[in-house]
View 1 (spheres, rainbow, N blue to C red):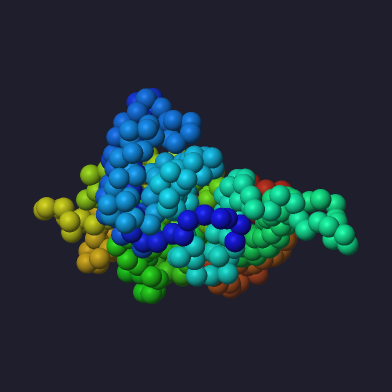
View 2 (cartoon, helix red, strand yellow; view 1 turned 30 degrees about the horizontal axis):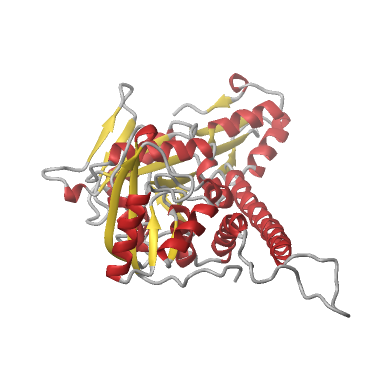
Length: 431
């Protein structure tokens, strides 16, 4: 739309460079999976190492010649860099390689564009794409120095580039307004769940850790699940009944990845709020992945970025079917509380242990009591009903209201505070 750039195809050459000044290095395996997930056909992976990126071509002249030779030999249509490229580096590389060049951010955006299914998901992807595109408009219209001139055609002299920028800004503002509306609707739903005392449990984790398979197994849903990166993009919520604590809402969310572009995190704020405002996070980990420790660190860093690092978290080590002699189990801390669950979502092994662990963690902060309220505490009784916390009500021989209540303890304490009372002033029926 805005670019005079070479056409892109599926035959791809991948470039992965290790930089000495970046500390920890990692291999190109994940990037190969990303390219395949985007529908590319990788024919070669070019690797190398440098002290720091070259300002003009990102790689050195020798490595650029190597890439050029492979592109010509293989008839490659696109070169994918496992790094963030500046707009000028992309243009300079395309001028030499004579084919389309995409960086890691552009590739992830392309995958997200393919996976988005809901209206909200498509808006979020478009916002991220437009914000990425806005930095790459320079010299996109070199054939038009100014808009049409001549007698009867003279205008304020706005260049095509300026027009494109203005159109982009207007579209970005429009999408942000629509996403703000979606965010408001989600907030309303979350407040409604909070009023009815329904806890929210959110699945988070590295991409392809098996979150959607686990979600489907636990809830009986049919969310799309596949052995590929970013199979799930749009959030899905389902109710799940646990015997010990009643109904919870389970949320499946987009997976995280190393070097997840910041603008994607910003664009998906409305979706990621399901995690930051959850009562419990299930951090799903691919137990068979040799990089699982590094992946867990990446997930924790994204959780911190979206403000979800303070939410109680239960680690779920999935795919134990790929580990020799691994058995489903619950690991506990020194207080006997669950901290890790080992299971296989594919085989359905250990799902009962996960439900047990969730119930144990959530039940710690749930008040399940029978309260005896005299008539002068009618305001407190009304507030408990308004919260949706009353499961049943009857009256004793003295005309007092006997309420079976169930709600998060923090909500109960807030109600008492608003009523100007303390917990020890309320009579509780002995068990």
